[in-house]
Amino acid sequence: MQKEKQSVKVSGLSYSVNGKTILADASFEIERNEFLGIVGPNGAGKSTLLRLLTRILNPTEGCILLDGEDLSRYEAKELYKKVSFLPQTSYFDFPLSVLEVVLTGRYPYLGIFESESKEDIKRAENCLSLVDMGGFSQRKITTLSGGEQQRVSLARVLAQETDFIFLDEPSSHLDIHHKFALIELLRSLARKGKGIAAVLHDLDLASRFCDRILVLEDGRTTALGEPPQVFSEKLLSSVFKVRGSWDPQSGNLLVFR
Amino acid sequence: MPTGKKTLSVYAVLASLLLLTVVVCVSLGTVSVPFDKVISVIAGKLLWLDTGAGIEKSQELIVWDVRLPRVLLAATIGGGLSIVGAVMQAMFRNPLAEPGILGWSSGGAFFAVLAIYTGIHQQWFLLLPLAAFAGTLLTAYAVYGISRYRGFVENTTLLLCGVALGTLFVSLTTFVLSVSNAWSMKEMLFWIMGGVDSRTWTHFAMAAVPVLAASVILLFYAKNLNARLLGYETAKTVGIDIEKTTKHLIVLSSLIVGASVAVSGIVGFVGLIIPHSVRLLIGVDHRRLLPASFIAGAIFLPAADLIARTVMSPQELRLGVITSFIGVPFFVFLLRRNFSGRGIA
Image (cartoon, rainbow over all chains, first blue to last red; front, side, top):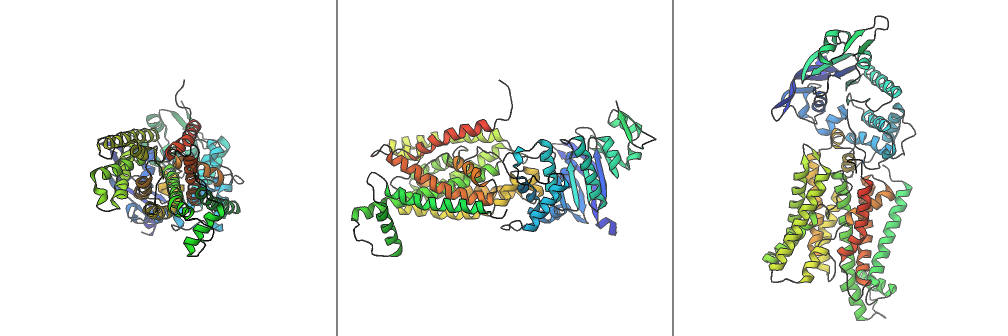
């Protein structure tokens, strides 16, 4: 029972728009100290699932319990002290400073006319260092590259200090070095007790770093479990139209056409 | 963000400039009144002092009854339209949003003219600004409703829709004026090309109360506006109730625009020129941008009005003509800067 209270519990979750089902009957849990990878072909409903988990969308059917309480019953500020989200696309059309962007992650903690404290600024700076963007705090966000902007967005999410972090393709703009750094950071956060769910396209990366994998196909849950069980040759060919096998020497998943 | 030294000095400079602008604008005109006399008259009236020595009755009349209400009204409207411009740009995440361009002012002007034409403004003096407020609000909602799709506002649709509805309301205003008994070219120009000529203390009070009240309340939405700059999903997941607060922002902004239009007609582009200039000075954070934009707008519009009434003196130009002359090049510059590589030619 205690365990149930300490997690995100999804049951019978469905979402449809104009009669078209985007997500059907998803049921799973995300524990604190777990890194869940969400994979699937384009249009499988992965982003929709994350938008439901973060209450950007409301489910057509089913429910999401966060620590035993239905997501819809949370006050916005209370909810987003527990749950944060890195969207697929962030918008940077106005020249906010990098620090100002990261500090928006502190907004759930601030009253309507309250400004960020020195402590908030220190936390924001720390989060920037975690994503290898220390020293960029006074730069204009508009002058950074796509990958740098993505890391600043991640720092914003970290500054929110939530128990659950949901990320939509967090590594899409990152170079190979920062891609590994990101995934290691997410894994270490999970080890420190955060519940993490990320939509990932890189199956090799997902298989190596995620604790469990959720496979979506046409809105349906095709598989859920630990990487070695989930990524069978059969599933890889039927869902992803690729061949793949586990390298017995390194224990890594090898994927090829 | 904590208030930095730079921010404080910008505020100090802006505040001094505002005082200077008021004195200069009251002093200069077809008949000029020396600065010291301007200050004496104002101080005398405000502090109930007898500073009458050496001041002619006509000078007192010019300063206190003619120019000061006009200058203060221009300052109020300039400040209000600027703060609304800054709010609209963040709310719609669109650097070209502004009450004139998005048709809000035209909607307000049409309803104001309609109130005058039907005579209902004579029933109660506040029915004129209320009508302008209703017209602004209606237009704001129409433009927003048409361009909104599943939580996102489509930028191009927003601008085009605003321009189209704005043109419609200007046409309707012209139509109503041309069939009305009060028809005159002057009347039409007043509404369409705006101005603060022959405005009294009553007009000032009518605009100042709603503009100042709504502007102060808008300051409470500064962090909300910051978060909106990062897009719908980010704003929502740092705890902003977008749907609900968009309504608040539209109503408060419409109140300011409606109150302004009711007494001064359509004065365009102020909400574009000022917030963008102030962002360069002080940054994007709305906790600094909103108050600074208000003060800068309150400096800009009386100065523009001074140009309107002095360059071709004794003939007066329309205030809206001056703001368009400055605003359109600004608009074109912003338009070019926001090109983001769609389409080829």
